[in-house]
Image 1 (cartoon, rainbow, N blue to C red):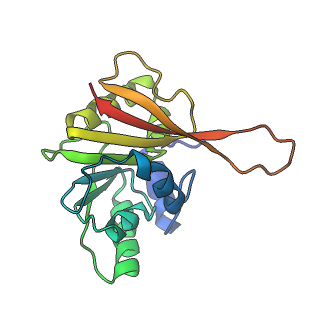
Image 2 (tube, helix red, strand yellow):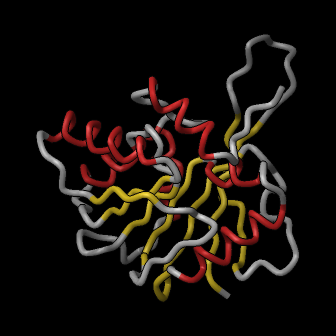
Length: 196
């Protein structure tokens, strides 16, 4: 039976015992891939929204670059606890923000220079194409002028949907590690999305 990634109850059960996990790629590798595609104006005063922060340490990579205006959101409240703990473990204090929010219905008045997700869009896609459209509309509504959304997905067709309010560009095809020499090539896909 497939996991119910689109349900909050799945994440609550998972985060009860999980303290750190990276989807698809390590946060270090993800940052290496996205660095050339980050907005040129991204700096210490920039605002970053990390969607589906879960138990990832991605936010710590932004803080290490001097970016403290990072809002980490997740559908499940335990993710905020885990994120704070990971930041405090790495830096000795907590300076970033951790909130509970639904990525398909963001209520933020803030505008973000950068929005990132590591496979959150894949979990949301378990709820169907309309859920992905809702997420895209929601993210588009909180992007600053010249802001970008960078999304990592296992799907080569994740954003192949009509009526998206964003222009989509595939910026990287990341090969996955093979277990056997004759295994087929499998990739993860990194997308950059901008408001139209």
